[in-house]
Amino acid sequence: MAVSDADARVEPGSFRDPGNRVFHRRGEVLRGLDERSTRDWRALAASDFFRNLLAAGKVCGTEELLPTPVDLPWATVLRHERIPFVSHPYEWSYGMLRDAALLHLEVLRSAVTAGFTTKDGSAYNLQWRGATPVFIDVGSFEPARDGEPWAGYRQFCQTLLYPLLLQAHLGLDFQPWLRARIDGIEPEQMRRIFSGARRLRPGVLTHVHLHGAMQDHHAHASTSDVRAQLRAAGYSRELVLATVRGLEKLVRRLDVRPGESHWSDYQRTCAYSVPDRRAKEDFVDRAAEVTVPGLALDLGANDGRYARIAARHADHVVAVEQDPTVVDALYRVLRDERERRILPLVMDLADPSPGGGWRGVERAGFADRARADLVLALALVHHLAIGRNVPLAEVLDQFAGLTAPGGTLVVEFVHPEDPMARRLLANKPDGLFPDYRREAFERLLVARGRIVRRVELPSGTRTLYQVVTGG
Amino acid sequence: MTHLAYLDAGSGSLIVQAVVGGVAGAAVAAKLYWRRLVARFRRQPTDRS
Image (tube, rainbow over all chains, first blue to last red):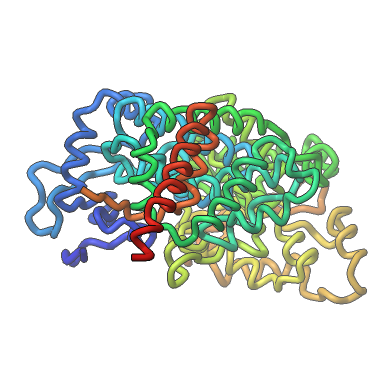
């Protein structure tokens, strides 16, 4: 069903279930329901389990718009709480994906116990308020039909369980797998990866090998026939619960920490003097204080030190860091603090998330999602400009593009004489970056905004700029 | 009434859930296969006629 209202903008990631669709109108996140989904919603809204999940913040805030807007082609319209920053599973760390999987299973278990189920089991059913996961797909709930297994099991395996198994058992970063395939990893591929003795790792024999073999064997059987046969053979709600509990037990067991990496000790080893660090913290604090950002982005966030300073003044902070291990460590600390305003994400800024899925818009690319009132780019320019050969002008274009018009960019320029810059330059031929100079950098900054503050750090080899973008 | 979900749950993905559901689940799976087997033998005479 189309959304006809001129003000309404359909959410490109919400079309797979034709019975309901998310759209945006006048700054609100709305969900239109057809007649059948309306009946499911009425049952859901009257249930205790749903009320409890809402009250605990485990499902995103949802209320029905009354009276139903007559200018929209839906039987019912729901209004959802706005998620501060939409992220994709391939931008999460291992611990985040695992906690998201556990929340999905918990939500499903509550639903099944109350006679409901979820129509699907996708990692995209989950989002984050800071370091706290939240189940967002309210349209996924429906009353369960007796004798039917969980329809979302395959999707759960492909987008949540398999990526976890890859990382926990083999130490492979799961993010590139999920980024490349919107529907996740197929059992067939997993069977090839988990061959030999690897079959014996927890969860692999059943959820990977048996699952894959069953898929092959029953490839020509229709799901409606199989559902009827299972019902006739006595499949029951208790068995659905047993499966969910088994999955929960397995995912809890997969409690590993990604190993140490070059970046995990960066704050300690990156040769900042105490006066430099204090000056930098003070600079960031003052910039955030005068900006009062709704959304702040900390690019190259490392252990989140500056994201936390920004969070003193910002409603929400997204801390972007390329190293999954570092992000995972930050996530665990934030989670244990029950932090709800700082969202850590895994992303390489020289290769940020592109648009994905149907027509490349089903999952919006990072550049299309990020318009921040405050952007921090500290100790980052030299890594992109020297380490990755990105021209300085383009580095600044990226930062300016992520900043809302009139927003503030805080950027650090590490002079070519700085020990860190020298270390990076030593890996490249002499004279490869003749424009990597402070004067050239400042000229490029002025072309993109107004420098309102500039501070030289005590070491004398680093300069901080506060720039109001767009003139 | 046949009720189909919007998502293709996958026939194999449905049956494997019986098997991973412990002893009771395995019993359901065994019953399903037994019924299929019996149905096949029962069908044969009529197929020939």
